[in-house]
Length: 329
Image (cartoon, rainbow, N blue to C red; front, side, top):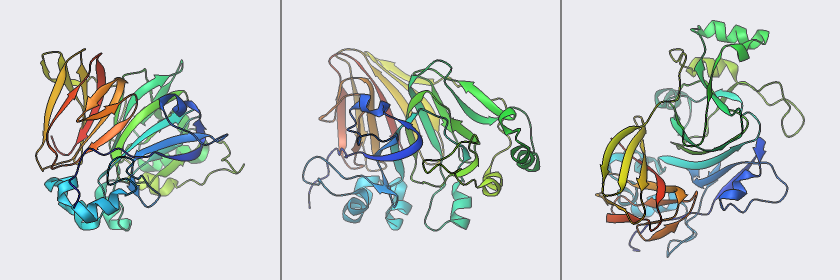
């Protein structure tokens, strides 16, 4: 059996009414003439499976790798995912040239009760670039009941009820399952999320889809899974957790499935880590250039470090900013 090593994947793309062409700036070879909204860079879902592009495992997808390696790939904290033959997370880039729908994702408990072999969806965004006036919606502008939200959708006043947050490059947004949210026009973001593709649209800005017809809404399901305790939210600051020898590490979003961090390396600095068998790690370079466990990464590219990789080093000759994801705290 082939020894596991740091893995990189071929991206797959989705055509979306709100997409554009900006992802070509980040080394994505986009199909000609299409509005590309998403680059799925690490994905193991029935709606899209990325394949390994490097080494002896090239051509295999994550479902196949879990069958071969199980906990050795994903880690002991993810035993349930090995039993289900699913990889826990997805990594994407999103190019919002129009507003995404106002939407919500269910949590794990609701998904388990109502959806076959599908997870809930906690997610988070790191903002890569923005146009003037770029923003996201997250939660509500004022306290509402489920009935009040349904009525606002019916009478066309929902745009007045949502919480608007201005964004700029470098901001991060935590989007727990159940959050009423939208990525608005004029932003490119990197996204770490649970392995789910279940989205319930509350509202779609009264615009046609790619076929010229309005896209379907799932307002009643959306309201059923929504949280109504998120009022007046703002961009949160990161929490510094370590700084030494030209390396700074800060915690971004934490939920029951994954933690994300941002790591800054000054020129010549390095980060030393250890995949000890408990969890895989995903690393991406947001700015600069870095060698991640022997994989040379430029913006915005990702690698998956298997759970049993052992000790590894990340270093950058000229400095870099990196995004890290793993299970637990």
